[in-house]
Amino acid sequence: MTPAERARLIDKQEFEAECRAVRERVFARLGVKQREDRTHVLHAMAKPVQPGQFKRPFEVQPAEPPSHKPKRNGRPHTVAGRSLTRRQWAAELGITYNNMNQAVHIHGSVEAVVRRRLGASANG
Image 1 (cartoon, rainbow, N blue to C red):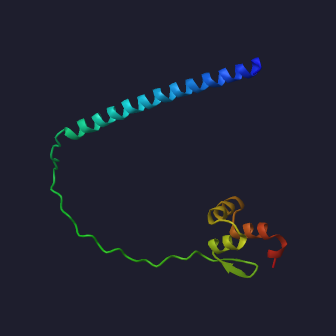
Image 2 (cartoon, helix red, strand yellow):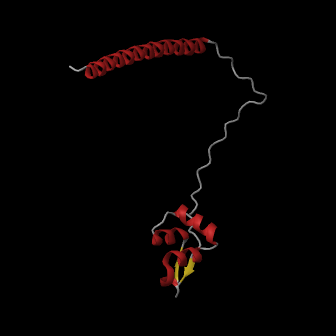
Image 3 (cartoon, rainbow, N blue to C red):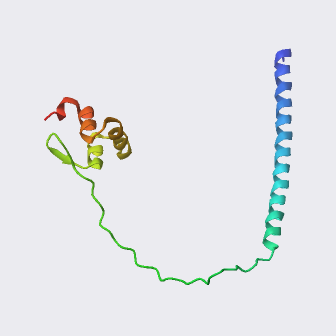
């Protein structure tokens, strides 16, 4: 074994020993922390709970049945003779609905976005 190999071996062994020591310290600290947390929780649970004081007594109202509103469809936007909603145009262009809304915000209208994405093919 050459002196360089021997030095690397010694360094490796020292590093492993340091890692082992650090690992043991961390696990010991975690054990202490877990015990501290547990005692804190048990102490908090042991405190008596005072009954709530309310100015007015609670009156339980019966729950109203949920109203089933019809799903609102988006407004159609006509470009080159085709009328589709924003969500449908987004699917047609292969982009997300969120991306479509951002593009409309930037370019001003659904028509502008569609014409930019499809180019000359949308000039109808």
